[in-house]
Image (cartoon, rainbow, N blue to C red):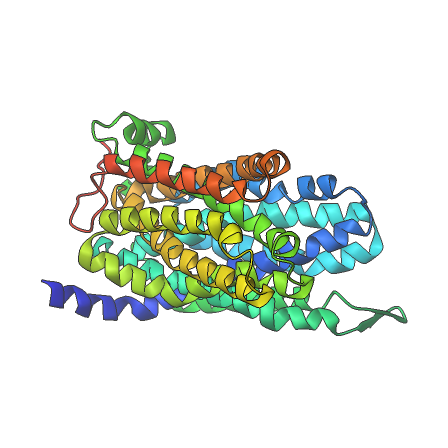
Amino acid sequence: MATEKKKSLKGYYATTFLIGLGFFTMGLMDPLYDTYVPIFLSKYIDSKGLVGTIMTFDNLLAIFLIPIFSALSDRTRSPIGRRMPYIIVLLPLSAVMFGIIPFAAIKTFWLLIIAVFLLNIFKQAVRGPVVALMPDMVPGEVRSEANGVINTMGGIATIVGTVGLARLMNVPIKINGQSFDNILAFPVAGLLVILAVILLFIFVKEKNGNYKEEDKEEKVPIGKSLKVIFAENDKSALFILLSLLFWFIAYQGVLPFVGLYSIDVLQTSKGTASLAAGMVGIAYAIFAIPSGKFAHKFGRRKTIRGALFALVIILMVIFAHNSLTLGQSQAFRQYTFWALLFLFGIFWVSVVTNSFPMLWQMADYKTMGIYTGLYYFFSQLASIISPPITGFCIDVFGFQSLFAFAAINMAIAFILMRNVHKGEPEDDSVEIN
Protein backbone atom coordinates (compact mmCIF):
# COMPACT_ATOMS: atom_id res chain seq x y z
CA MET A 1 0.00 0.00 0.00
CA ALA A 2 2.75 2.47 0.92
CA THR A 3 4.46 1.91 -2.43
CA GLU A 4 1.22 2.54 -4.31
CA LYS A 5 0.64 5.79 -2.45
CA LYS A 6 4.12 7.03 -3.32
CA LYS A 7 3.52 6.25 -6.98
CA SER A 8 0.21 8.12 -6.92
CA LEU A 9 1.92 11.10 -5.27
CA LYS A 10 4.41 11.32 -8.11
CA GLY A 11 1.47 11.47 -10.47
CA TYR A 12 0.12 14.54 -8.69
CA TYR A 13 3.30 16.63 -8.45
CA ALA A 14 2.70 18.45 -11.74
CA THR A 15 -0.93 19.21 -10.86
CA THR A 16 0.06 20.37 -7.38
CA PHE A 17 2.80 22.60 -8.77
CA LEU A 18 0.38 24.24 -11.20
CA ILE A 19 -2.26 24.71 -8.48
CA GLY A 20 0.52 26.16 -6.32
CA LEU A 21 0.83 29.05 -8.79
CA GLY A 22 -2.22 30.53 -7.10
CA PHE A 23 -0.53 30.31 -3.71
CA PHE A 24 2.68 31.65 -5.27
CA THR A 25 0.85 34.86 -6.17
CA MET A 26 -0.07 35.39 -2.51
CA GLY A 27 3.50 34.78 -1.39
CA LEU A 28 4.68 37.27 -4.00
CA MET A 29 2.36 40.12 -3.00
CA ASP A 30 2.15 39.75 0.77
CA PRO A 31 5.78 40.52 1.80
CA LEU A 32 6.04 43.50 -0.55
CA TYR A 33 2.72 44.80 0.77
CA ASP A 34 3.77 44.34 4.43
CA THR A 35 7.17 45.98 3.87
CA TYR A 36 6.38 48.98 1.67
CA VAL A 37 2.76 49.99 2.23
CA PRO A 38 3.63 51.26 5.75
CA ILE A 39 6.35 53.39 4.11
CA PHE A 40 3.82 54.81 1.63
CA LEU A 41 1.36 55.53 4.46
CA SER A 42 4.06 57.18 6.59
CA LYS A 43 4.42 59.82 3.89
CA TYR A 44 1.00 61.12 4.92
CA ILE A 45 0.61 59.85 8.52
CA ASP A 46 2.96 60.53 11.43
CA SER A 47 1.24 58.18 13.87
CA LYS A 48 2.65 54.65 13.67
CA GLY A 49 -0.41 53.46 15.56
CA LEU A 50 -2.70 54.75 12.81
CA VAL A 51 -0.45 53.21 10.16
CA GLY A 52 -0.68 49.90 12.01
CA THR A 53 -4.46 50.18 12.18
CA ILE A 54 -4.71 50.70 8.42
CA MET A 55 -2.41 47.70 7.93
CA THR A 56 -5.00 45.49 9.64
CA PHE A 57 -7.43 46.09 6.74
CA ASP A 58 -6.45 42.76 5.21
CA ASN A 59 -6.95 40.80 8.42
CA LEU A 60 -10.31 42.40 9.17
CA LEU A 61 -11.59 41.82 5.65
CA ALA A 62 -10.22 38.28 5.64
CA ILE A 63 -12.37 37.28 8.60
CA PHE A 64 -15.51 38.04 6.62
CA LEU A 65 -14.53 37.55 2.99
CA ILE A 66 -12.60 34.27 3.11
CA PRO A 67 -15.39 32.18 4.71
CA ILE A 68 -18.07 33.82 2.52
CA PHE A 69 -16.28 33.33 -0.81
CA SER A 70 -15.02 29.88 0.16
CA ALA A 71 -18.61 28.81 0.83
CA LEU A 72 -19.86 30.52 -2.34
CA SER A 73 -17.30 28.65 -4.40
CA ASP A 74 -18.51 25.38 -2.82
CA ARG A 75 -21.93 26.11 -4.27
CA THR A 76 -20.80 27.50 -7.64
CA ARG A 77 -21.47 25.44 -10.76
CA SER A 78 -19.86 26.45 -14.07
CA PRO A 79 -18.31 24.80 -17.14
CA ILE A 80 -14.83 25.76 -15.89
CA GLY A 81 -15.37 24.51 -12.34
CA ARG A 82 -16.38 26.01 -9.03
CA ARG A 83 -13.10 27.69 -7.93
CA MET A 84 -11.78 28.86 -11.30
CA PRO A 85 -14.42 31.58 -11.97
CA TYR A 86 -13.31 33.39 -8.82
CA ILE A 87 -9.61 32.85 -9.53
CA ILE A 88 -9.62 34.18 -13.11
CA VAL A 89 -11.58 37.31 -12.12
CA LEU A 90 -10.40 38.24 -8.63
CA LEU A 91 -6.68 37.42 -8.89
CA PRO A 92 -6.12 39.65 -11.98
CA LEU A 93 -8.09 42.43 -10.25
CA SER A 94 -5.81 41.97 -7.22
CA ALA A 95 -2.77 42.21 -9.51
CA VAL A 96 -4.02 45.43 -11.10
CA MET A 97 -4.72 47.10 -7.75
CA PHE A 98 -1.38 45.88 -6.40
CA GLY A 99 0.45 47.45 -9.33
CA ILE A 100 -1.43 50.73 -8.85
CA ILE A 101 -0.56 51.18 -5.16
CA PRO A 102 2.82 53.00 -5.51
CA PHE A 103 1.41 55.31 -8.20
CA ALA A 104 -1.58 56.11 -5.96
CA ALA A 105 0.88 56.84 -3.13
CA ILE A 106 2.51 59.53 -5.27
CA LYS A 107 -0.80 61.25 -5.97
CA THR A 108 -2.89 61.58 -2.80
CA PHE A 109 -3.50 59.87 0.51
CA TRP A 110 -7.09 58.99 -0.38
CA LEU A 111 -6.13 57.39 -3.69
CA LEU A 112 -3.66 55.25 -1.74
CA ILE A 113 -6.34 54.25 0.80
CA ILE A 114 -8.81 53.34 -1.98
CA ALA A 115 -6.16 51.25 -3.78
CA VAL A 116 -5.21 49.44 -0.55
CA PHE A 117 -8.86 48.83 0.34
CA LEU A 118 -9.79 47.46 -3.12
CA LEU A 119 -6.67 45.28 -3.23
CA ASN A 120 -7.57 43.68 0.07
CA ILE A 121 -11.17 43.08 -0.98
CA PHE A 122 -10.11 41.24 -4.14
CA LYS A 123 -7.15 39.42 -2.55
CA GLN A 124 -8.99 38.16 0.52
CA ALA A 125 -12.08 37.18 -1.50
CA VAL A 126 -10.01 34.94 -3.79
CA ARG A 127 -7.79 33.40 -1.10
CA GLY A 128 -10.31 30.73 -0.04
CA PRO A 129 -11.09 29.47 -3.57
CA VAL A 130 -7.36 29.42 -4.41
CA VAL A 131 -6.50 27.29 -1.38
CA ALA A 132 -9.56 25.02 -1.71
CA LEU A 133 -8.59 24.12 -5.29
CA MET A 134 -5.87 21.72 -4.16
CA PRO A 135 -7.97 19.40 -1.94
CA ASP A 136 -10.59 19.32 -4.69
CA MET A 137 -8.09 17.74 -7.08
CA VAL A 138 -5.64 15.81 -4.88
CA PRO A 139 -6.60 12.64 -2.95
CA GLY A 140 -6.76 12.92 0.83
CA GLU A 141 -3.91 10.46 1.46
CA VAL A 142 -1.33 12.67 -0.27
CA ARG A 143 -2.57 16.13 0.71
CA SER A 144 0.11 16.67 3.38
CA GLU A 145 2.83 16.18 0.77
CA ALA A 146 0.90 18.26 -1.78
CA ASN A 147 0.44 21.02 0.80
CA GLY A 148 4.19 20.86 1.40
CA VAL A 149 4.78 21.53 -2.30
CA ILE A 150 2.36 24.46 -2.22
CA ASN A 151 3.88 25.91 0.97
CA THR A 152 7.33 25.58 -0.59
CA MET A 153 6.12 27.63 -3.56
CA GLY A 154 4.78 30.23 -1.15
CA GLY A 155 8.17 30.33 0.59
CA ILE A 156 10.01 30.66 -2.73
CA ALA A 157 7.63 33.47 -3.71
CA THR A 158 8.47 35.26 -0.46
CA ILE A 159 12.17 35.00 -1.24
CA VAL A 160 11.58 36.19 -4.83
CA GLY A 161 9.58 39.15 -3.54
CA THR A 162 11.85 40.21 -0.68
CA VAL A 163 15.24 39.46 -2.24
CA GLY A 164 14.60 39.81 -5.97
CA LEU A 165 11.74 42.20 -6.69
CA ALA A 166 12.47 44.40 -3.67
CA ARG A 167 15.70 45.47 -5.39
CA LEU A 168 13.55 47.10 -8.10
CA MET A 169 12.35 49.60 -5.50
CA ASN A 170 15.75 51.29 -5.85
CA VAL A 171 15.36 51.68 -9.62
CA PRO A 172 14.07 55.19 -10.46
CA ILE A 173 11.44 55.72 -13.14
CA LYS A 174 10.26 59.02 -14.63
CA ILE A 175 6.63 60.14 -14.35
CA ASN A 176 5.71 63.48 -15.91
CA GLY A 177 9.36 64.47 -16.00
CA GLN A 178 9.94 63.63 -12.34
CA SER A 179 12.05 60.75 -11.10
CA PHE A 180 10.52 58.36 -8.52
CA ASP A 181 11.75 55.21 -6.85
CA ASN A 182 9.83 52.77 -4.58
CA ILE A 183 7.54 51.85 -7.48
CA LEU A 184 8.77 49.25 -9.94
CA ALA A 185 8.48 46.08 -7.83
CA PHE A 186 4.69 46.44 -7.53
CA PRO A 187 3.69 46.54 -11.23
CA VAL A 188 6.26 43.83 -12.07
CA ALA A 189 4.82 41.61 -9.33
CA GLY A 190 1.34 42.36 -10.69
CA LEU A 191 2.39 41.17 -14.15
CA LEU A 192 3.81 37.96 -12.67
CA VAL A 193 0.52 37.35 -10.86
CA ILE A 194 -1.44 37.73 -14.13
CA LEU A 195 1.00 35.36 -15.88
CA ALA A 196 0.48 32.80 -13.09
CA VAL A 197 -3.31 33.05 -13.47
CA ILE A 198 -3.05 32.46 -17.23
CA LEU A 199 -0.91 29.35 -16.71
CA LEU A 200 -3.26 28.13 -13.98
CA PHE A 201 -6.30 28.53 -16.21
CA ILE A 202 -4.68 26.87 -19.23
CA PHE A 203 -3.19 23.83 -17.52
CA VAL A 204 -5.44 23.13 -14.51
CA LYS A 205 -8.83 21.70 -15.37
CA GLU A 206 -11.07 21.24 -12.35
CA LYS A 207 -12.49 17.76 -12.17
CA ASN A 208 -16.26 17.48 -12.39
CA GLY A 209 -16.30 20.77 -14.25
CA ASN A 210 -19.34 19.66 -16.23
CA TYR A 211 -22.09 19.12 -13.67
CA LYS A 212 -25.20 17.10 -14.24
CA GLU A 213 -28.50 18.91 -14.15
CA GLU A 214 -29.52 17.32 -10.84
CA ASP A 215 -26.21 18.39 -9.29
CA LYS A 216 -26.95 22.02 -10.07
CA GLU A 217 -29.97 21.95 -7.79
CA GLU A 218 -28.20 20.11 -4.98
CA LYS A 219 -27.01 22.79 -2.59
CA VAL A 220 -25.94 22.22 0.99
CA PRO A 221 -27.01 25.13 3.22
CA ILE A 222 -24.03 26.86 4.79
CA GLY A 223 -25.69 26.84 8.21
CA LYS A 224 -26.22 23.08 8.01
CA SER A 225 -22.58 22.54 7.06
CA LEU A 226 -21.40 24.61 10.03
CA LYS A 227 -23.76 22.69 12.30
CA VAL A 228 -22.12 19.45 11.19
CA ILE A 229 -18.72 20.81 12.19
CA PHE A 230 -19.68 22.07 15.63
CA ALA A 231 -22.46 19.62 16.58
CA GLU A 232 -20.84 16.38 15.50
CA ASN A 233 -20.24 13.82 18.26
CA ASP A 234 -16.58 13.69 17.35
CA LYS A 235 -15.29 17.21 18.06
CA SER A 236 -12.06 16.80 16.08
CA ALA A 237 -12.83 19.65 13.67
CA LEU A 238 -13.75 22.00 16.51
CA PHE A 239 -10.61 21.20 18.48
CA ILE A 240 -8.23 21.55 15.54
CA LEU A 241 -9.78 24.98 14.84
CA LEU A 242 -9.28 25.97 18.49
CA SER A 243 -5.74 24.60 18.40
CA LEU A 244 -4.83 26.61 15.32
CA LEU A 245 -6.30 29.73 16.93
CA PHE A 246 -3.79 29.40 19.78
CA TRP A 247 -0.78 28.45 17.68
CA PHE A 248 -1.46 31.39 15.36
CA ILE A 249 -1.86 33.68 18.39
CA ALA A 250 1.64 32.56 19.37
CA TYR A 251 3.09 32.99 15.88
CA GLN A 252 1.35 36.27 15.00
CA GLY A 253 2.37 37.67 18.37
CA VAL A 254 6.06 36.97 17.86
CA LEU A 255 6.73 37.60 14.18
CA PRO A 256 5.93 41.36 14.02
CA PHE A 257 8.31 42.07 16.91
CA VAL A 258 11.40 39.95 16.20
CA GLY A 259 12.91 42.75 14.11
CA LEU A 260 12.45 45.27 16.92
CA TYR A 261 13.79 42.71 19.40
CA SER A 262 16.89 42.29 17.23
CA ILE A 263 17.51 46.05 17.17
CA ASP A 264 16.61 46.95 20.77
CA VAL A 265 17.92 43.90 22.63
CA LEU A 266 20.57 42.30 20.42
CA GLN A 267 21.76 45.66 19.02
CA THR A 268 21.73 44.51 15.39
CA SER A 269 21.58 47.04 12.57
CA LYS A 270 18.31 47.94 10.87
CA GLY A 271 19.60 46.47 7.63
CA THR A 272 20.08 43.01 9.17
CA ALA A 273 17.10 43.05 11.54
CA SER A 274 14.79 41.63 8.87
CA LEU A 275 16.94 38.50 8.66
CA ALA A 276 15.46 37.35 11.97
CA ALA A 277 12.07 36.77 10.38
CA GLY A 278 13.87 35.70 7.22
CA MET A 279 15.29 32.67 9.05
CA VAL A 280 11.75 31.43 9.63
CA GLY A 281 10.90 31.96 5.94
CA ILE A 282 14.00 30.11 4.71
CA ALA A 283 13.28 27.13 6.96
CA TYR A 284 9.68 27.24 5.77
CA ALA A 285 10.72 26.94 2.13
CA ILE A 286 13.27 24.16 2.76
CA PHE A 287 11.25 21.91 5.08
CA ALA A 288 7.67 22.24 3.81
CA ILE A 289 7.89 19.18 1.53
CA PRO A 290 9.88 17.01 4.00
CA SER A 291 7.37 17.79 6.76
CA GLY A 292 4.54 16.59 4.53
CA LYS A 293 6.42 13.37 3.75
CA PHE A 294 7.17 12.83 7.45
CA ALA A 295 3.49 13.19 8.34
CA HIS A 296 2.52 10.84 5.53
CA LYS A 297 4.73 8.17 7.11
CA PHE A 298 4.19 8.76 10.83
CA GLY A 299 0.77 10.45 10.97
CA ARG A 300 -0.42 14.06 10.86
CA ARG A 301 -1.60 14.29 14.47
CA LYS A 302 1.66 12.91 15.88
CA THR A 303 3.67 15.21 13.63
CA ILE A 304 1.74 18.31 14.68
CA ARG A 305 1.79 17.50 18.39
CA GLY A 306 5.51 16.69 18.25
CA ALA A 307 6.19 19.95 16.41
CA LEU A 308 4.12 21.95 18.92
CA PHE A 309 6.04 20.39 21.82
CA ALA A 310 9.33 21.28 20.10
CA LEU A 311 8.10 24.86 19.53
CA VAL A 312 7.33 25.25 23.24
CA ILE A 313 10.90 24.17 24.09
CA ILE A 314 12.47 26.42 21.43
CA LEU A 315 10.45 29.45 22.56
CA MET A 316 11.51 28.89 26.17
CA VAL A 317 15.15 28.69 25.05
CA ILE A 318 14.69 31.95 23.11
CA PHE A 319 13.10 33.42 26.25
CA ALA A 320 16.31 32.60 28.14
CA HIS A 321 18.64 33.42 25.24
CA ASN A 322 19.32 37.03 26.18
CA SER A 323 20.28 36.15 29.76
CA LEU A 324 22.32 33.09 28.75
CA THR A 325 24.38 34.97 26.13
CA LEU A 326 24.68 38.33 27.91
CA GLY A 327 28.46 38.10 28.27
CA GLN A 328 29.06 36.88 24.74
CA SER A 329 29.93 38.90 21.63
CA GLN A 330 27.21 40.64 19.63
CA ALA A 331 27.89 38.39 16.65
CA PHE A 332 27.49 35.23 18.75
CA ARG A 333 24.22 36.53 20.25
CA GLN A 334 22.89 37.45 16.82
CA TYR A 335 23.83 34.18 15.09
CA THR A 336 22.50 31.96 17.87
CA PHE A 337 19.22 33.90 17.84
CA TRP A 338 18.95 33.37 14.08
CA ALA A 339 19.73 29.67 14.53
CA LEU A 340 16.92 29.35 17.08
CA LEU A 341 14.49 31.09 14.73
CA PHE A 342 15.56 28.75 11.92
CA LEU A 343 14.74 25.80 14.21
CA PHE A 344 11.44 27.50 15.02
CA GLY A 345 10.69 27.68 11.29
CA ILE A 346 11.38 23.96 10.79
CA PHE A 347 8.78 22.91 13.35
CA TRP A 348 6.37 25.72 12.51
CA VAL A 349 6.10 24.58 8.89
CA SER A 350 5.44 21.05 10.16
CA VAL A 351 2.37 22.38 11.97
CA VAL A 352 1.07 24.56 9.12
CA THR A 353 1.70 22.05 6.32
CA ASN A 354 -0.22 19.25 8.01
CA SER A 355 -3.06 21.06 9.80
CA PHE A 356 -4.87 22.11 6.62
CA PRO A 357 -4.92 18.54 5.22
CA MET A 358 -6.27 17.28 8.57
CA LEU A 359 -9.17 19.72 8.37
CA TRP A 360 -9.80 18.95 4.70
CA GLN A 361 -9.93 15.24 5.55
CA MET A 362 -12.90 15.99 7.83
CA ALA A 363 -14.78 17.73 4.99
CA ASP A 364 -16.52 16.30 1.96
CA TYR A 365 -16.49 17.63 -1.61
CA LYS A 366 -19.48 19.90 -0.97
CA THR A 367 -18.05 21.57 2.13
CA MET A 368 -14.33 21.82 1.28
CA GLY A 369 -14.53 25.59 0.83
CA ILE A 370 -16.41 26.09 4.11
CA TYR A 371 -13.72 24.22 6.05
CA THR A 372 -11.08 26.27 4.23
CA GLY A 373 -12.91 29.46 5.17
CA LEU A 374 -13.11 28.42 8.83
CA TYR A 375 -9.38 27.76 8.87
CA TYR A 376 -8.73 31.28 7.65
CA PHE A 377 -11.35 32.77 9.98
CA PHE A 378 -9.56 31.43 13.05
CA SER A 379 -6.05 32.19 11.77
CA GLN A 380 -6.97 35.76 10.79
CA LEU A 381 -8.76 36.27 14.11
CA ALA A 382 -5.47 35.39 15.80
CA SER A 383 -3.59 37.92 13.64
CA ILE A 384 -5.97 40.67 14.79
CA ILE A 385 -6.04 39.98 18.53
CA SER A 386 -2.48 38.82 19.13
CA PRO A 387 -0.18 41.78 18.23
CA PRO A 388 -1.95 44.24 20.58
CA ILE A 389 -1.73 41.71 23.43
CA THR A 390 1.95 41.00 22.87
CA GLY A 391 2.64 44.73 22.46
CA PHE A 392 1.03 45.35 25.85
CA CYS A 393 3.10 42.52 27.37
CA ILE A 394 6.30 44.09 26.02
CA ASP A 395 5.31 47.51 27.41
CA VAL A 396 4.64 46.09 30.87
CA PHE A 397 7.03 43.15 31.25
CA GLY A 398 9.72 43.75 28.61
CA PHE A 399 10.67 42.03 25.37
CA GLN A 400 11.34 38.64 26.98
CA SER A 401 7.64 38.26 27.81
CA LEU A 402 7.01 38.03 24.06
CA PHE A 403 8.47 34.53 23.90
CA ALA A 404 6.93 33.36 27.16
CA PHE A 405 3.50 34.42 25.88
CA ALA A 406 4.09 32.50 22.64
CA ALA A 407 5.29 29.40 24.51
CA ILE A 408 2.16 29.38 26.68
CA ASN A 409 -0.13 29.58 23.64
CA MET A 410 1.78 26.83 21.82
CA ALA A 411 1.40 24.67 24.94
CA ILE A 412 -2.36 25.30 24.97
CA ALA A 413 -2.52 24.27 21.30
CA PHE A 414 -0.53 21.11 22.14
CA ILE A 415 -3.04 20.19 24.88
CA LEU A 416 -6.08 20.91 22.67
CA MET A 417 -4.68 18.67 19.91
CA ARG A 418 -5.14 15.70 22.27
CA ASN A 419 -8.86 15.93 21.44
CA VAL A 420 -8.33 15.64 17.68
CA HIS A 421 -8.93 12.04 16.62
CA LYS A 422 -9.66 12.41 12.90
CA GLY A 423 -7.90 13.89 9.90
CA GLU A 424 -5.50 11.09 8.92
CA PRO A 425 -5.43 9.94 5.27
CA GLU A 426 -7.31 6.75 6.09
CA ASP A 427 -10.19 8.57 7.84
CA ASP A 428 -13.52 9.06 6.10
CA SER A 429 -14.65 12.61 5.42
CA VAL A 430 -17.77 14.13 6.96
CA GLU A 431 -20.96 13.36 5.11
CA ILE A 432 -23.79 15.89 4.94
CA ASN A 433 -27.21 14.23 5.07
